[in-house]
Amino acid sequence: MDQHDLWQSKWNKRTKGLPETEFAKRSFSLIKDKNFKSLLELGCGDGKDSLFFAKKGLRITAVDFSEVAINHLEEKIKQENIKNITPLLMNLEKLELNETFDIVYANLSLHYFDDKTTIKIFDQLYELLNKGGFLFVKCKSIDDFKYGKGEKLGNDYYLFKGHKRHFFSKKYMEEKLKKFKIIKIRKTSSKHFNIGMGTSHALFIEAVATS
Image (cartoon, rainbow, N blue to C red):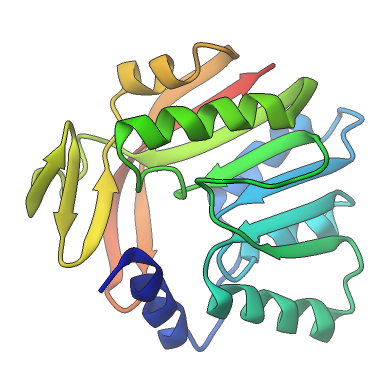
């Protein structure tokens, strides 16, 4: 099963939406007093965080490569009559967008790629972020309990139960953000809901940067 089919299957198992994440709430607290208008969410899933940001008055472009996830989001937009979210079916490896954004937000969506692809994605993000805009990124940490499990595909990159994960260290995150001005990088832990697997305690690297 390739990664697209894996996520199609995972999103098909989700029957009930979850509330916005703590990462979304922390991110918004840092930009709520700024005159930002637009936000790009990468790997939006069923849109729980996109919906949160939209209800705060931001204009959202929500990107995911899973048709099932995008369909879930479109249903929620229709049900709640939300006008300021644009869902887009798109692969993060090749973002074809005709605008730039005040905020780029990626919650657990950038840790699935090899190093070469990860570098390419972060380079794209730099081009997509308006001058003075904010980037928020959260990825799995090398200290996470799943680190080292499964088949090793590359440096800190593993295939476990069909799921590819590239675990980030603080140093690796700093390297990927070398074009940006880093505001904060920190390690966090939380209970995390995995589709089809339930809740687990996980460790992450979170970063805030500006252009």
